[in-house]
Length: 237
Image (cartoon, rainbow, N blue to C red; front, side, top):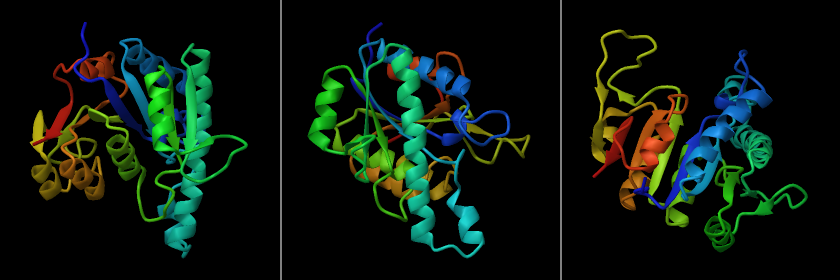
């Protein structure tokens, strides 16, 4: 099997690491995610990871209680670092070498994000986990994933969710829905698809970076995407 993509960034929601309650970090779930990432790393694909923080902290909850937006976002950045460390540990136990890089300097637990250093790690077969978002408030981890993918010259951005693609309406609350196999960037922006924010999509559009939205838990979905086989929804030109 010959991969179509050499370097891929995968964006995973923090909820993927949560247990049945939907909160916190469940080591068993982290192991499951690590096994899926290791499977495509075994295809000799260079992998960057960005993990959200929804299992630990949702800034929206703070905002609803009058919290300052910048403070709420900074708390979310710190939460992504906890997920990044948990993911790194799970991958290392799978035999996959990792490096955690943080957009906010915290040298005791992670390298500072340096683009060229990240690229060198990828070239040496290490999975690089990008933590702390972009390092700035008001930007989501979707945007962080699009930014890092663009900076390191990735060929593909995978948004790994709990649904198998982009639908015209929320499939969790609507029965009569349509799933799209392919959308243009402009289609996705005009539809205001809920799976990724408009800033991230625009950044990918401006840099001609294709996006695949897929179900993380569907067996083989990540491998199919990396090999260029049809899976999920492709967002491209």
